[in-house]
Length: 103
Image (tube, rainbow, N blue to C red):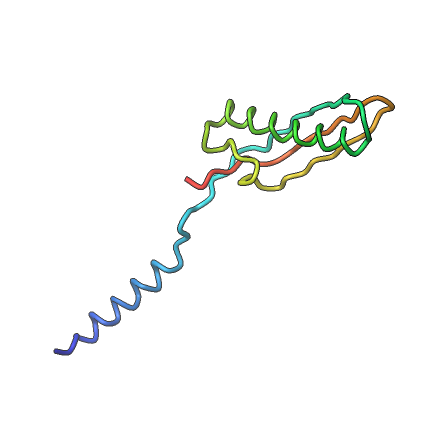
């Protein structure tokens, strides 16, 4: 049994159209910026690591509070940037990212 030419063309066009639609489109919100400080005793590296981790956690908490659970994930955000500066007794890190959702 042969398929009519128009049916084959429509089937091919449908397959191409469906393959170009992304499985999960990203939806992003306005960027968020937060700051965190660490004063733990020890090396400058340890303080920087702690301040960076805390800044990312605070960013996630603020993103969830402002935009909802689907925007909570630092790993899904766009334009991630963490900048740290040292003082004699502490490290201060600023985390900025654009919260995005896969839903």
